[in-house]
Amino acid sequence: MEGLEHTLGIVVLVNRLIGRPVASLLALFGIQVADPAHCIPDYIVMVFIVAVIMIVLFTLAGKKRDLVPGKFQVVSESIIRFFEGQIVEIVGPEGKKYTPVIGTVGLFIVFCNLLGLIPGLMSPTAKLNVTIGCALSVFLYYHGQGIKAQGLLKYLKHFMGPIPAIAPLMIPIELISHFSRVISLSIRLFSNIFAEEVLIVVIASIVPLFLPLPFMVLSIFTALLQAFVFVLLSCIYLAGAVEEEAEHAVSASSEAHLKEAHA
Amino acid sequence: MSPPLGLRPRINYRRLAEATSLGLALPSGIAIGMFIGYWLDKWLKTDHWMIIIWTLLGVASGLISLLRGLKKFIRDAEAGKED
Image (cartoon, rainbow over all chains, first blue to last red; front, top):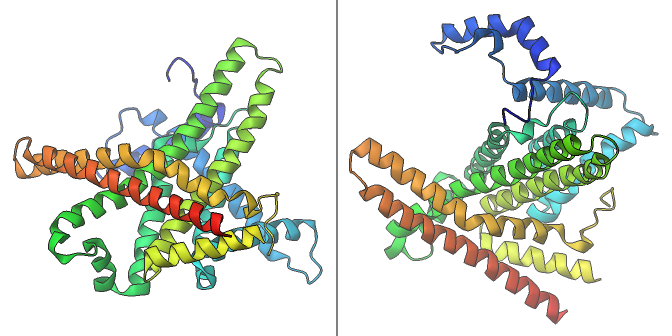
């Protein structure tokens, strides 16, 4: 990507301001950076921008709560209710307590994806490190909630499969399939956002005027859809970890869901 | 409780999400199996045995998760037909 990208202005600024202190702080922990003047990569700066935007927006949203909601409150409430609705639909009514974590991850990804549309900034999710971080936090969270809901031994029993005789074969297979969820979650998000960024860069380098606009509109759609898919899959994994009889319960809920959709 | 943005579950986005994960199930299973095997080979100094065994396990795991997903799809489709 060296030929396509140049360092963004804000990244240069941040590195000039706090690059050297951060490098010396890392040296305290025994990590030597090659270039102390440019030690903060662009995606970390972008992640911090997203974090600041989210903290400011949702602190403002939580501060002023009226019985008759204003415009801002209606929007923020409907966003949260949307996440809650998705979780309740997949996990069941007891899944409401998972809304904070899933909603935070989902909104973080939405903001990360949309940040790339602002000129002078990039999507941090176009780097694999950020998406693997999101996927790993979801992975740790659903395993933690599964252990909390069922107890450690009972949860580990799910890894052995239905027949005890082939348990030594099933344990590594289940282990691999759980770890591959992290890979598939992170690769999907990363590749979609990365492809979209490269597409816009290439189109803009051919015809800089007007032609990138339809692709940017398309990228708004991709950004929202990918965040939504990420949230849905985390909910499905969470439901599989938390529910007692995973297979049966998932099929029952999907049948109920289908009936509701047809009604 | 109606979701905004026109994202009503009528189009069934949940199955769309599951379908996109089916495509990645096989390669990511193989990749994870190979990675674990490579790492174990380095750790136990058993040249090439672990990577062979774990890659095969990865292929099996990818196939199993693919078949599980497909089974769910077929069951959902049949449940939809009966209605």
